[in-house]
Image 1: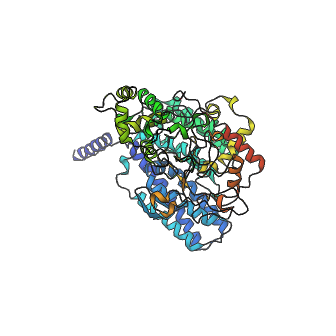
Image 2: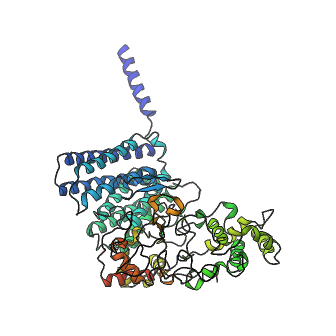
Image 3: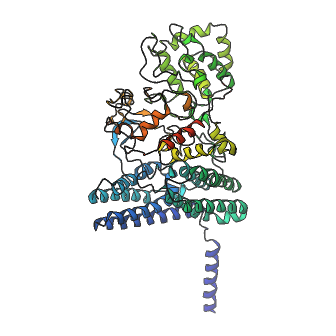
Length: 609
């Protein structure tokens, strides 16, 4: 009898423990997957370190490095999104950098791109000590990632799917352009590794798919298989058809992830983001939210503010001598530039320091002016109005004048109806900035082609795009899809570059332009001769080119880059960020690139007509 009771108790305990056994959550599964990938990466890095200690042949080290990068890219589907700070340390550009809030502290480059340069630069012998040191640095960062507290709470379902979306966006904008692998040009295999990582994460959600979204799972799996197959059968970095891949393979994967998240009801919280995460790809008309780059809700653009800003834009009322308006230097017929190397100063005898940039899409960036000294359009407007050489005006003095104006008083009252005092210095700046924010140029022939109109690009233009994205390395600074310096996939940081621009077109005795650029604002030596990366959109209308207007034609611009920038002219500053090697582009290839850039022209806007 005692034996039977004991057996009964054991059976009951077993059944109860099984009944109450907790099912592992998706958060925990993702954490487990992530730590597994991290351990695999650490194992491969340790193996690489052992080969370094043996002073193995450089070719053996290169092969192992590529294997390590495969594991990293699988893991990076998670880390690129959830650990942006560590990602900069692991995979940032091989250039010294600073943080905006502390520009005096120079952060030395480290991570995979430094290691890649050490291993793949044909002009350098194997420096085993430096290589080993860099591997140890990467391993240290991996240890930090492994020991991060409360990991499981990060991996909410909706956010994980947003990370998948972001990783496809990174393939499109940075991966296949060579940004992540500038020397080894291992971009195509690394794109495959990213898709492998996405696929492994999706398997964690098999039960949810079976219950709620089986067709979405089938579609997504099919699109990933097709994209991977295209990458595997087209491994050559130079010959790779990026336009075809993006349009026919990567974009469908991106949209399938969006659809799967919707059907699984994995909804991201409502908040301001630069990219509309519901847009089926980043080339859609509604892909970007311009309000993200605007001030808070109180000062968002409205039809009334845009109309008021447009009127002020063409009026000389804000200038001190009342003889210059914003439109004096930003003429709509030439993409809101002035067609001059440098704009005339107020005395109309001397010239300003720099070339006048286009206003199209200027709201789609986080820095204004060539030296990036303003973060908001309102600040830029104030700076220009008060500049003695530009407008010699005063917003404070303009307030009383506009209050008593028979037309403007009413326009301000409508535009800022909730304000007790509608005419203020800030509202003046905000009104004109609202007009500028309405100048969005994202419906060029290229955009229309990417949205399905196959007639909008010819064979030469398509070749030009592939060169722009690949061999010519243009897209490693002029990032898709905006073609400016706004860095994907977050689109929250605007880059500056150091190119070594000459002061004149004299190629026999070239001299570096004396304008030191961003350093005059930040004081950081990293920014000496640095200038904000401008937009390539509408570029055929915005000549002359560069911050000093030194080049009159796109052919001259391309020749400068083809030679390696300032380095090719033997005038490069020590901190040139532009790759110094020659691009070896033929005249035909340069012609193709220019033909592509012409497809980016779009100056149709209801806001200024």
